[in-house]
Image (cartoon, rainbow, N blue to C red; front, side, top):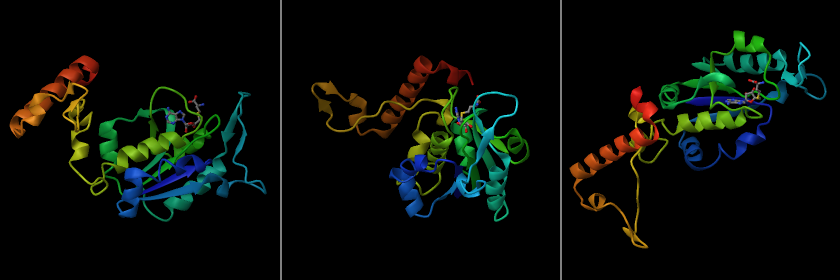
Length: 225
Ligand code: SAH
């Protein structure tokens, strides 16, 4: 899979995309992540990308031309499954969406900044708009990092144990059961007996019952689905 992220502040993406699972997935060739600096498509000597918004509202707006040039530079070279814009008014990211995006071949993620981007780009070039929650961030970079992380860990080969992602919360609309590691007794706080039983059937039944109980108690909305 290839992910191209277009950003006005690429430095914000450096740490989240260069460690842990994403780093290893890149090294293994499972995913290629390319960061495009929007200022490379900026206008004039100072490569500026923003201008005052029409209508007198405060705040700067990213101009259509640098966005158009950055996006078409990519789309002229290969076919993209999605041209995504990160936006607080987009469809809220959830596990089924991450599952489906992880099957794509090539995607673009465009990060907004300031007041946002000129609406004509959203109308003509963007094919999917994603929000990571009902709050406003200063830029789309952290949202792009969240989306990328959620997708990449699902691509076969990204994680050392491929089945692990399937037992995470939200797969099957259930929260994950509690997890424990050694020691079995820490300061008198004991790991549930059944997990030490060595009986896979009993353990699975316990995990399923816990997942259901936690979902009922903490996220009953998931069960209504
Ligand atoms: N004026 C916009 C907010 C702009 S915030 C509005 O009221 O909707 C600046 C940029 O941060 C946006 O262009 C978007 O790319 C990003 N952003 C902010 N909140 C976000 C969220 N919840 N999910 C995804 N991207 C977000």
